[in-house]
Length: 154
Image (cartoon, rainbow, N blue to C red):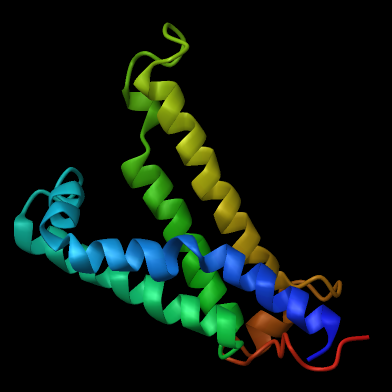
């Protein structure tokens, strides 16, 4: 493995580290608590459990796709959407009412978490569009293809 390929692997592992293993393990080992957290947004317990299981599947399978390079652009696209959705659904800094009035308020804390989610999603979008200047062309033309992140790099 070349040095560039090793760096690509390390960066991809860093991008998914929050999800696999940590968030996925938390959902598995603290399922009741995770369902309770999901119920803050999705009130019926059965719906919260389905949403949670969907999130778990996304975290596991998309993370593995990003690390392995198998359908990595599609996996990164899904993860970017997942990050944006969790930011909007679970980090509603605008709804706290204390954003401007309290420097240490809940609104400001959620704001930083909201931005972190969006920033992580933007990192996933770099896998989708690549850095070779071709933009969305490879993703649109073959969204389930591998970007071959570990092949011989120039």
